[in-house]
Every structure is written in structure tokens, then in C-alpha cells.
Length: 629
Image (cartoon, rainbow, N blue to C red; front, side, top):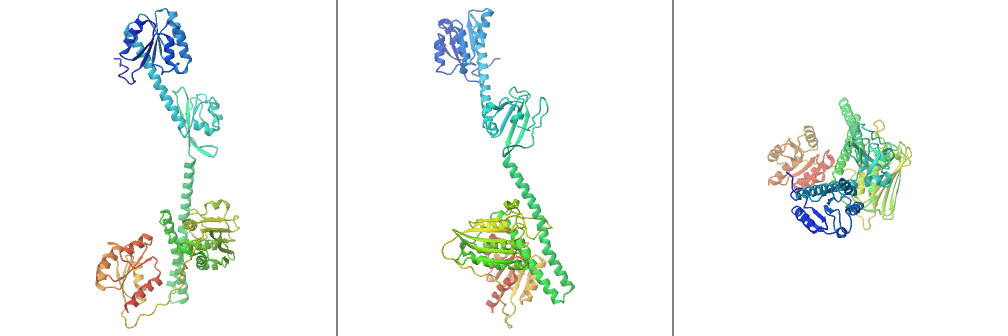
């Protein structure tokens, strides 16, 4: 059953009728009005005049013989104009000879109906023409939408015929290829995309191809054969993947640097561990030789400090990647900070007999900064200079004010930096020479810390070198801060001798809480030798029981404990009226800012990060012991 137009997928169509016969015109109009919106014209000129100001109808029913013009002229006029070239025309005529029908169809009519006709036939033929028109319009809209989509794609789209010639390019393709679109149409693919093999004839195509460069950009091409398309036999789409490829290359380089760093980390950690193991072995062989024991003690102290510095650097890198570094800023004199950094780095410089020349301006070099972090920056640069400068080399250190900046320079005559390494010298895990045979020590993270800390102070750091073997220079620039400078307290270089306890006073009770057997046992021994009465607990609940039993004056408390952790132990001790005044000293591997805040909130008096500085620990305990005497 045929479906009505108005009940189908298209809106109600418009039909114009041109007929000079009032009777026949009205009859045709009434016949079609049930299905279409009909408008009746008595002559061709009035219809054409209306057409100039109105949208064309969906179908034109045209009497072939008109008083003012002929159907032939009307058809030719309609077909000559772009806006009406596809307008369906049904001719009505009393002439039914084959020559008349051919004349009408040749002139541009789409159908020919001889008068008199059955009204059902008129409706059927108009309906067919309307449907054809509406389907054509839908196809044209779809094509326009499709072409618009292609035009606005950020990808390059090039369509080729079976002969390999361009039949379509979108706007982006024309822009990137640098040619007007009309100049590309009909051109061979080899000329438009040199070196890009598309395939010939029915040769199979691989959808994905190797990256294709155009200018300074990189494109990922995709070619697909279209066997049924009249427009093209092949469509080539090229997507700009320049940033993706650059990101992938950067990720590969970062992964490579990470692997090199892990290898270097293993190497660097084994060095001090090897020295520590050797020192311990020597003391077991010659336990009563004071010279061997003194030498072994020096090695243990130095190598433990070295490993501590490496672990601190690793923790700093972790904080950098998570954005957790915090500055404690205030007005300071960078000259004083640089002098302390020189003292810290002096052993590394002296060990290689390097001569250091220092030139620091007399005027105060005021900056708004964190003294500890800025000293870390300068120490890192000085130790770097010592590391990469041969024995007997020279290191120049200077600081002064340049305009609105305070500038510190560290220069050496060492191995230098190759030009290709300069752009990455501050990248994480980057080293000038990363082979294990060439390694001078260090993890390749120090300069990353330098750059990050300086940037957090609103400054900049730059590396300069004239090439391998010609030394290097690092320049730190910080904003100059006007106004008063608060002196930074001097760095503690030694701890005064502890006063001996009163001979009449009983030893102070100390509770050590730690689940690590070796650390706990050694802590007990160390504090026992220092004259304290030491009790040991291995977990949090045992610590609370032991504290209730012995009532210690101080608790040396690990925070990471089984059962309940050290934070909860401290909180419960503070909540117990009998233990509220106990001195709580946290000794833990947790040492970030949040850990310090949390330990303070639960009542910890002092927070030391492992490995503990025993001189400082003894100073705190001695202070409590004196307060009890």
C-alpha cells in the first residue's frame, strides 16, 4: 500500500499549477489539494514573477500551451537557472503524439501527461515527482553536511580516483599543502603527497601507514579504499600527531633516564654499604686495635652521613613530584648563607686539593628566602663543582647584586658540559655522563632540586659551558629584597660536652619503643652507656603497659609500630594523668611536614628523623635529666 506524503517522512509538499483554462486548472487544483499545498497560476509570466520572490515549489504542473509563452520556453528558463535546475516539472498537454512527448522531455520536463487524464493518475505522478524531489533534497543536505564536516575537520582529507588523482581536498589539507584547492584537483597523488604510496588499481591498501612529515609537523596517515564511491576510489586522512610523538619521545627518554637512575642508585648505595661492611669486618678481625677501631668509626660516620644525604635527596624529589615542598621564608643575607655553604662543602673541595677563590660583595645581599633550602642549593652547586673538577683544579665562587637581583656564581675548570647536554642538565635523573665506569657519585637529582627551589623563590638558575673539558658555570639569580636583614643563627658545628649526672641522683628512666630489633637493642645499649636506666617495648600496647609499670621520665618512641602506632601511643600517654608530664621524643622514618604537624598535635615534644643524631638526642635527654635534679 502506498504511503501518503503527509503521513510519511517528509513535510506536506507545495505544488504550483500553471494552466490558462479556468476549468481544467481548478479541477487539477482540487484533485491535488487533498495531499498537497496547491497554488494556481493562469499564465507563465505570473508564475515566473512569483518564483523570483518565493522559494520554488516541490513540483510544477505546467500546461504546455499558454497564452503568453510556451512550455518549452518555461522549461528551458527553469533549467538554465541554478536555483530551479532540479525543480520537477509535469507537463499537461492535449498533444499526445510521440514527437510532442519527446519535445517536452527534451526541453526539460520530467514527466508528460496527456489530457484528458484520470485524476488518480495525476495524483500518482505528482506524488512520484514530489517524493523524488524530497529524496534528492535530503541527499543534497546530507552531502552538504558531510562536506561541511570534512571542511571543518582538523585532519587533512584527500580523496583520489582510481587513477590516483585528487578529486577532493578539505580546507585543512589545502592550507597545510600550501595550494589553492582548485589547483590540487586532478593532480596526481604523487605530486600532492610526495613519497606517500597509496596503491594502484585494485591493489590492497593497508589502513595505517608510517608517519608522514609535512614541513615541521608529523602526520599519522590512514588510507582506505572505497570500491563503491563515484567521488573517490581512495580516501587518505592525515592526523597531526606532532605533539603526541614529541610526548612519546619525551616519555621514552624519561623512562630511559629512570632506568639509568635506578642502575646508578644501586651503584651509589652499594658504595657506602660496601665501606660500612668492610669497616665492620675490620673491627671483628682486630677488635682490640685502637687505630683500626678509630678508622672504622670514621668510615661508619662518613658513609652513614653520605647515605643519609642521598635518602634526603630522594625524599625531596618525591616531595617535588607531589608538590609538597614548603618554604619557611624570611629576610636573610645570601652572603652569610653562601659562607655557611662553603664551610659545608669544604671537606669535598679539600679532599681533592682544589683551590677555591671567593669574591663576595661587602654590602648585604638581602633576599626573601628559606635559609635551609638556599643553603642546600649552594652546597649542591659547590659539591657538584668539586665532583666534576679534577684533583688540584680551581673553583671560583662569587656573589653580588646586579640591579634588582642578587646573583651567585659557582664556576670550575673541570670536565665541562657538552652542548647537547645543556638543555637537559636540570632534568630529573639527568647526568652529564651516566655510565657506571664514569660515575663520580650522586643520583642525578641535585640540579633538579636546585632549579625547583630557586624557582619557588621567584628566581632562576642557568648552566653555562664552552664544552667538554672546558669547565662549567652555574648562575643563580634571586630577587633582591630591600629592608632590614635578620641574621641567620650560625650552624651548629659541635655539641658541648654533656655535664656528668650528679653521683647521688638515681639514673633517669627512659622507655625505648621500637619494633625493629636491631635499632631497639642498639638504642638501649647507647642510652645505657650514657647512664640512663632503659626499658624496652616492642609494640604500642606493650609500651603503654611498660610506661604504667616503670613511670619513665622520657619515652623514645618509634611512630610506625604494630598494633597501635606511635601517634596513638603519644595521645594515650598525654591523656593519662600519671603520664601527662613525660618527655616524648619521636624517632621515626616519617619526617615530612605533615608528620611533624601530626606528632605535635598528639603531644610529641621532639621529632627526630632516622638515622637519629645521637648528640642532639643526648642533649634533649640531658636537659630533662637536669630539670629533674
